[in-house]
View (cartoon, one colour):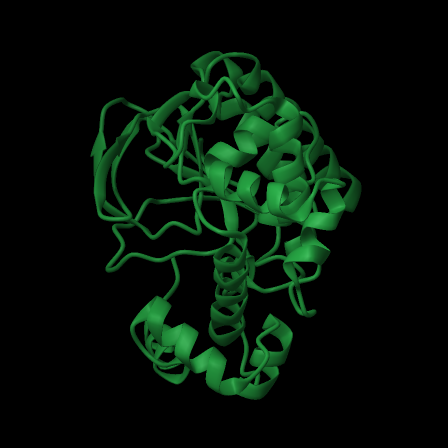
Length: 300
């Protein structure tokens, strides 16, 4: 996977974490893998393909080994850190990362079970036959062409890839925190209702979000919809909304010089004091401290 295309613009990778609509923009990188100094997290569905080497990841405190020459997909909202690499082949030893914004992933058709599994913290390994280094290189070339239509085709092909993966029982490197497939009482219709609620949250995050407004998109009774959401996502709807707002706020703090009051408004928090309290509870430091920390750390 030799990268002989034009060099990416300066700070190209940082732009993946910008905050348009839902926690970042679409992007593809091919680069030399670098061990990370600390865990990080962002709002994308991320896919990694390690060409002829294995990667050791620390994922939310758990050590995992990502296999060589297989596409591994996970929600990057879970803290993760590349801690070790080990070459296993004679290849060019390159890492390909695909960054798919969470809202774009949730808008993809016919993969509801996969969407819920990844949001539940699952990490899947796609069959080797479904994705090769050559395929990733073609996608990378389309992305780097700057042609909007080519980038849209790549997203459509990713949707098709995920649909193929969903036809069979996914191979989990890290299982989701819940086991949807093992619960016979949960149908694909139930999962679609939950995905509809998640999409509504992401599309309206800066607005006031009452439980009744969110559950209304399902056509179900509010209490039943809330119970269904908690059952599948393993977190109450209210807490999920707060988590998504915190993710957007963190991204705004890292990727812009936006004033704290504007961050609060753009993330949907009702007050600055509420925001500071929730932020400290989630990240263990103040918004200003997190911003200063990330200014000192080069995103890789």
